[in-house]
Each structure stands twice: as C-alpha cells, then as structure tokens.
Length: 133
Image (tube, helix red, strand yellow):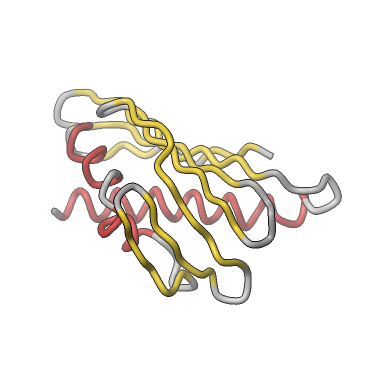
C-alpha cells in the first residue's frame, strides 16, 4: 500500500529541510508521542511504538537536498518505508512524505486512514519546526 502525504509548502531552503531529516535527533521530534525508547547510532535508530511494534529505522537512500528514504524493519515482519521528496524553489520548498507499507489486502482499508493521518501530521510538524528554526 502506497500513501502520500499532502504536499506542504515550507518557507525554508531545500538544504535546511534535508539536513534536518538526515539528523535522527531532530527527526524524533516529528514522530507521534507513542514513539518511545529512541536510540540513535549513525544512520540507524531504534524505537518502540507503544503497543504496536519495535522498529529499527535506517536511512537507505540520500539524494542531496531532494530525496531521503528510510527503511523500517519491525518485529511484526511488516515491511515499511518512508521517503521524503523535497522540491526547492529558492527560499521555499515543497515537501511530500511517501509511505509504503506491505499489509495484507484485508487489513488495507483499516490502516489506510490512520497511516494517511500519520503522514500528514509528520509533514505538518516538520513544516512548523523548520519555519520556527
């Protein structure tokens, strides 16, 4: 299942957004409060999503200032990836989060709405944090 967030216009250069998304210490601030036990080691971090799963997230693709992809391995063996696409326009940029989640067909209708909400919320939090920094 592929889900894309609403595209957000952010009043910041693409390099600023990209550099924040490459820094797991800053990324933690954009995740829902159910994310706990955050541990960082280079381009990898581990965390628990309360009552759902334990996750290991790794940066797997970087295209400077335009694209950043994370792979998330979890204890539920449900492949998940996040990819941020950044389109710079000088002093502003468009940001979209694409989520790819491998779920059984019968679960897709139940998880689509919550995953869409999470994607939109993450992008909105990034927008607010970047514009305030």
